[in-house]
Image (tube, rainbow, N blue to C red):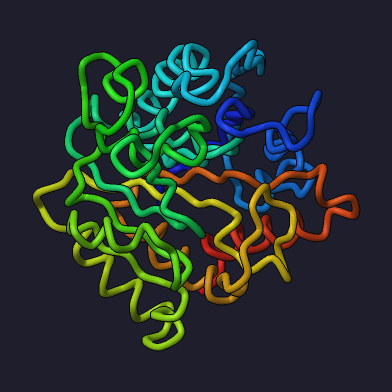
Length: 298
C-alpha cells in the first residue's frame, strides 16, 4: 500500500472573480478538507503547502489571453516539483486545490517522468481554446486544452515539454450529456463518458472497462483530476458553475474507487469546491466523505 501524501495547492488563479472586487473562494478548499480531518481519516502523511502567487488580474481585458498567466506559469513548475518528488518516491500525492489550473502542475510533473494519462472527472471538458472560442481567459476552464498542448506557449509549453498529456491518453468522466465540447472531443478521439452513459451502463462497471484502456503498457500510469462540479448541484451547490444533471454521490464514489485503487494510478487532485458558498459546511463534508470512502471502503 502506497503512502498517501496530502499536498495543499490553494491557488485560485484560474477563475474569474465571483463579483467585482472579490476573489474566488476555492483557495479555501484545502483548509476545509483538513477541517474534515481528511489526513487522519486516510492515515495520510503531511506534504505541506505550495503557496501560490497573489491573485491580481490587473488591467486584463477580453482578448488579452489567459489572465494571471505569468503567475500560473510561475506556480505550475513549483507545484510540479513537489508532486514529482513524491511520485518518484513511490508515494500517492493527494493534492487539495484550488481551481482546476492546478492540474497543470500534476501534468507537468508526470511529463518530466515519462508518458502518463489523465482521468478527468469533471462536469465540463475545460477544453476552451482559440480553436473553438473567440477568446480565452480563465485557465480553470481551459486546463485540459492547455495540458494537451493547445494555448499560449507560456502555459502549454513550460520547459519545452508540450504536450504534457497526449490526446489519446485522456479519458473524461462525468461530462453533462448536452455538453457542446463532446463533438470536438469525439473528432479528436478523446473518449468521454457522460452522466447518462454512467446510468445506462453502471458507474463501477463502466469505470472498470475504461480503466483497462488507461492501464495499457504504452503509458507509465495515470493521474486523476476531480472537479467537484461533476456532482449534481442538489448535493454540491458550492462550485463556481453549478450545472444540473450531474453525478450523485454514490456514482462518484464508485467511479473514484475504481480509479484510485489501480496500481497504475499515481495521484489525485481535488478542485473547485468553494467554502464561501457552503456556509454550513454540508457540501464540504460530503466531498470529504466521498474521497475517504473511495480509498478506504470495499
